[in-house]
Figure 1 (tube, helix red, strand yellow):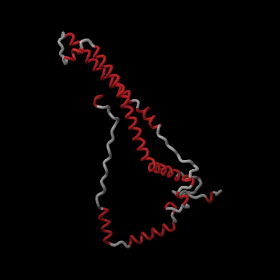
Figure 2 (cartoon, rainbow, N blue to C red):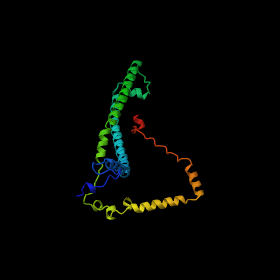
Figure 3 (spheres, helix red, strand yellow):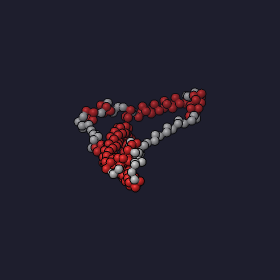
Figure 4 (spheres, rainbow, N blue to C red):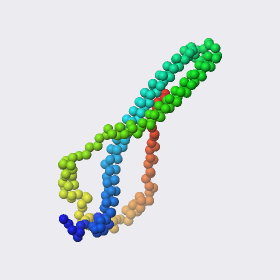
Length: 224
């Protein structure tokens, strides 16, 4: 076990090991978030698209089923009204007393209004089920972690290489390379400085326009 004198100083601010410095913990949290973004953002986007597609289709299917039942009941009610068949046969101008025509038209208008209110209620009830439906389809997604005994976990590539990679570069060699770069920069020709200056003074690259997202899918035109 190493004593306090052999404990390394903070890798960020070089503070003594005791009392413990929060710099490394804070930087670790930042590094974890960045690693998660690199590893998971694309997979999360694919998962989100898959869930939304299936949830949206389920909501539309439910709405179509509800409105189909409601529309059939509406048509059956209209056909049960007195004089409705002859009214439709003569395109709204049947050879019957105007009093019966007025009464029939009032009943038809009330039935259409009730149908519209029912369709709106069906659509609202369907859309309000999105949280439940989204939870269901997200629950179907499986996340599998590798076994702790897996060779890829026990001996990752950087461990098998003895940690001799770019992340553990010899600092003495790094200092020599920096000095060499400084010497190279000093010996840069004057015309090269002019070229670099012209490039640096050029206009900045154009900022891409962000995409504009949409909302929930609307029902087909016949249901609106």
